[in-house]
Image (cartoon, rainbow, N blue to C red):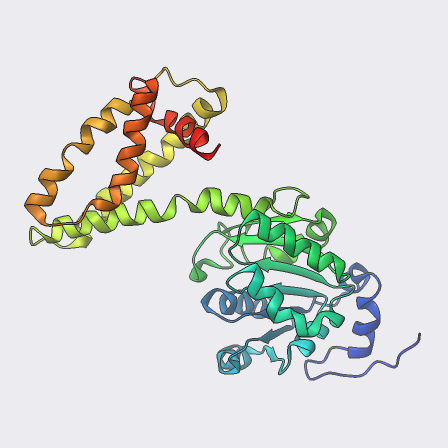
Length: 322
């Protein structure tokens, strides 16, 4: 099974890499060689991931359906793979940053013969079920698997406090943890179940759109008075800080199922909803997006939670799910 190593354009010994990909990559990693990595998908986030690895000194191969997106990274020192097969063959560690798990499978399908012995890390959106199916597909093709999520914007990739979490094969995480921290200093392994990252991605991600739409509604409201949206940024930030401080309290109430000590009750939120019509008349701002939320509060009150903490909405959501 001896192979004569040959030099590739990025200076890595291609024959040795091919051989080692079928064996133990950790041996290669600890041989004083910077680990090579391939990034599949060069949208704004994928490009940020590749840039972080290049700047950290890791030989980085990139591939994208639209090859022109690779140009800035090539200028920084990344290698561009013309074909997906070449991209997978170039590195032991493959990180995909496409939109969904299905998009990832479709992109990798032509190169499945290059997967055995490699590590695939997916950083995309998707459901827990999608992550489980992806894990099965990857393992069936002879690779090891981590699913992950970047909990920040592309410009924050590489920062010490940027959060990324992963789930799946813990031995993979342990082997490549230092390298994964190139993407963000707050790097967490949630557990061996491959769907945990997707579960937390959807659980935590559910906060984003309501919070943003709330800010956008506020911006429209102050502009209706001839004021600038930026005039409310400091106050909105303080409000979000306050909400953040309440999360541990609400989490404890939910975990204990005890909602009696209500700093902010369901009835208080229900009373606040009555002001929406007046706001619409005065500002001509559309607040209909709040209707389902107000309905949830009303149903909580009808279920006997009126004097309970607003965190009791969790009970209504849980029953609705059943």
